[in-house]
Length: 176
Ligand SMILES: Cc1cc2nc3c(=O)[nH]c(=O)nc-3n(C[C@H](O)[C@H](O)[C@H](O)COP(=O)(O)O)c2cc1C
Image (cartoon, rainbow, N blue to C red; front, side, top):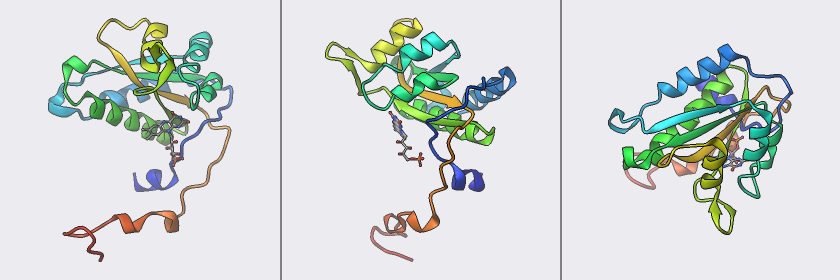
């Protein structure tokens, strides 16, 4: 795990190779093992490999989602706010587990933030994605993960770049 975290980066460029069904199964196993507050599991996942649907999802917001158009796979992390008061945390944990599992399986992935983002003046990015995906009322899409085999190599963040000054011991501001 520590080696995985040392090399992990967000990947936004993918080869055209499809993600195999058994790999998708492993990704879904990983997310379904996510911890959630009180075990309420307020999330659901929509795996998208239909190119047309991926294209439409890539238009969910003006910036930071267009690269999704060229991804072979998208996973919409959906959640039902009525099922947990901390659904945002639960969805974010599932998303990061998906990102790390994808990295571990040799895939690249990148988080696309929809919650608190706009599609246009009248609709949120989450509402737009919910419509594209045909979600039932009550389910929302805070995050979409773009996934595929990496076509870019991003170097690990060097150890010297880590913001060690953000860490205190026992009392804020006390350094070791
Ligand atoms: C909450 C959150 C929202 C993010 N939203 C986007 C996004 O909408 N589009 C995007 O391209 N990257 C997005 N990212 C990826 C970040 O830009 C990326 O993690 C950051 O620049 C650090 O790069 P690294 O992951 O390669 O270390 C998001 C990451 C997080 C954790």
